[in-house]
Length: 144
Image 1 (tube, rainbow, N blue to C red):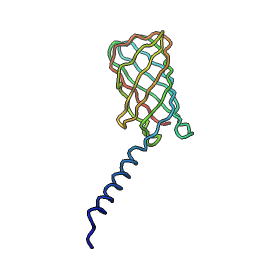
Image 2 (image 1 turned 30 degrees about the vertical axis):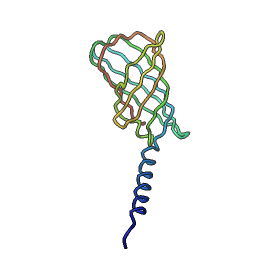
Image 3 (image 1 turned 90 degrees about the horizontal axis):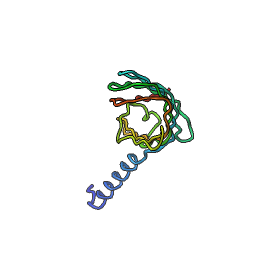
Image 4 (image 1 turned 90 degrees about the vertical axis):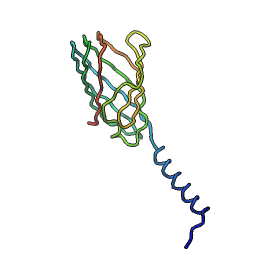
């Protein structure tokens, strides 16, 4: 049996549409985190948070290390969105800055972070305490 070129093109278009729909099915969720960061030359941070995705809340554990000029102690509280999630487990990973953090007001700021799974965190929040840093740092997030 010979398949016509029109029918073959139709099957190809349908397969392409199905594949792109699977890739485009990434969702967004709400995220809130609290981190305590401290250091003198070498710093560390730890904290917790929550991801809400499809009306279900997932507890998060946060940790990190910094090297460079780090002096002081601060508590950071951020909230925002986690996008490009296909499942809650995609949130896990090491995050690096995708853009520059911008200080908007006394102790407040916004930052965008990305992990290897392609998850993008767009966060805004505040810092209390005194922390001076010009360092290289990363933040690891895992599901509890």
